[in-house]
Length: 104
Image 1 (cartoon, rainbow, N blue to C red):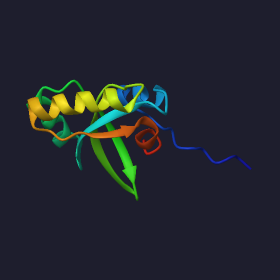
Image 2: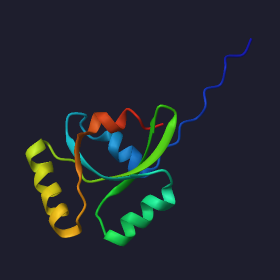
Image 3: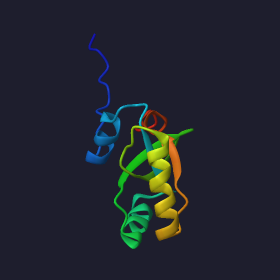
Image 4: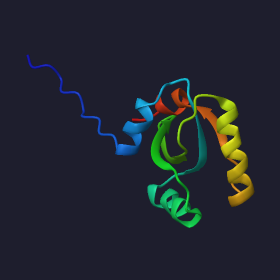
């Protein structure tokens, strides 16, 4: 009998970038929306230097904006403070592995 065919997992360039980051590094989650179109509007409206990745949790997929990666939490928090002051966005400091493991 033939072996079952595994569905091909396709990742966007942004998702590939994220999963290639050191898992213990930190990033900022800047926003989360149920549709890719909504998250891209947030990205464009705020002119953020961020990447869009999908995240599946409890069977529900959301799209999130994430910042560049930092080797330590303090550096990530510095950028979070700048974004809060300049854009009014309260970013969530997270470890890369927290988001990368939910990319489908």
